Image 1 (tube, helix red, strand yellow):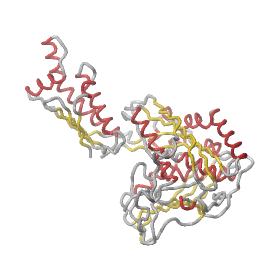
Image 2: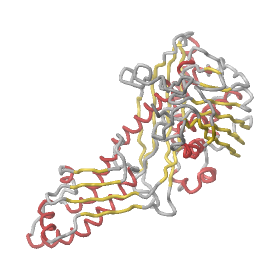
Image 3: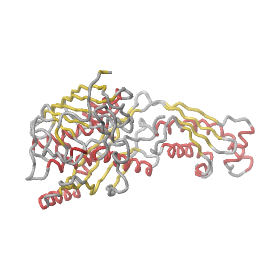
Image 4: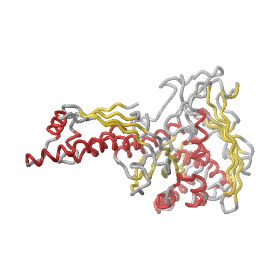
Length: 498
């Protein structure tokens, strides 16, 4: 069996002021790629991209991709971004613990202003008006509702010995790269339409959005603006890419077809004196040998090849400290989707990313034996979030706004990152982060966390001096309630470099 996200070990040194402002970060990162490189070489870029959501002042990092005796790891749905976000949040919580201040205070103080955002992300930062992360974070973390929930949790933890609650607010920045994408639209003689784009439908709603774009692009040839086309057979053939670039390519193809068909439509309508139906238009165009197939190869503007997506989330969890049983009490997710083609699809993606993150951080892990063979190889041993888990998402806010002309037609982002907000809440519980009960952290250990280590509790497994610290991320799950302290995870046997 192959697959799973990349295990990695991160060792860092961080400098900060007494007010929580971070001035420098050095990160040494070892990535377990498994027996073959696959797409592992692209991971460092994504990890650092997610890590840069905070202003670290001076940032220095050294990444190494390691060949080991375990199965090759996969690059799927924001590969590396979720690990990078985890590392960033671990450092933030560590600094807050060392200073005995609220973690949100440290997070807020180290969020970018637009000037530092441009310094860290370059042209991907876009325009100042599109930087919405600070406002989204404030909307959640500074709301009276959050303050009330935090106070309630403090009282609950003082009153309960065997059950504890935690709450955490985590921001997310995801860098989207645009790439050239082909698209082809062909109209059959019976009026049905076949669309070919360079994207794979894996449940993210690509086909739905491409069909919508086709109906929108050809809609000016229909009296109802294109709704009649949604009743036609719209077939798709899709081998790779993303929704916004595929839709842009389809839009260009539709524009070419409209240019060919509109003169015929206008001439026939003038002759008949009434509106021409779609089927009649296509029949007439076929009779006069009009090419009813158009191909486009969309390429991003040279001055705009990437952009940033922003989101923030709050999760509140309850943990039974005797059994490790975890209950997600409530989660609030906010996501800036730009100009959405289909808010319903994007809403599903937001919820899906959260659930995927919940599984990654709590109960999914590829455990291997000494030979590097996966022993969690089925549903009996590899558990994913399912229907028996309590419904956690209480509110989802898809924040839409107009984009400048330099922006792409649609804006979408990464998945599997929203779940890190729940991870922060779990870590909140483990550290006992309630005023008056703060557990000071133990120095000079590496931190490794996974489901099998939940009963090996090490209170405050982060490090008090915030220097020369390490975090180890397992394969497909990265956290459980209490964690454990160790240096290595799984069978990280270094054979040879790639």
